[in-house]
Image 1 (cartoon, one colour):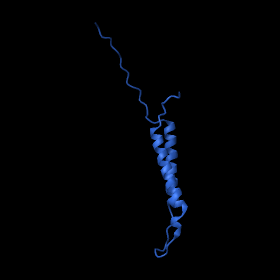
Image 2 (cartoon, helix red, strand yellow):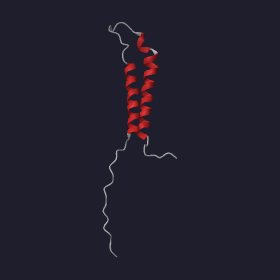
Image 3 (cartoon, helix red, strand yellow):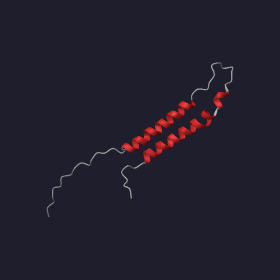
Image 4 (cartoon, helix red, strand yellow):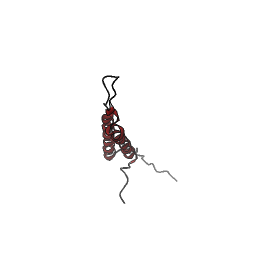
Length: 87
C-alpha cells in the first residue's frame, strides 16, 4: 500500500472578531466614556464650602448606570459569535 502525498494547506488565518463585534465594542466604550464624563465635576473651589451638587441624580444614578450598561455591551460584544448562521 502506498501513501498518497497530500499537500497540506495552512489553515486560513481569520480574525476572531468581525465588524459586528467591533461595532458593539465601540458602542460600549462610548457608553462607558459618557458615564465617566457625566460623573465628573460637582466639586467646590473652596474646601470649606460644601457643594450639594455632588449628590445630584446625574452623578449618583445616571452615570454609574451608563457605565454598567457599557460594560454589559462590551461583554455581549466579546461573546457575540458573528460566524453563527441563522436558523
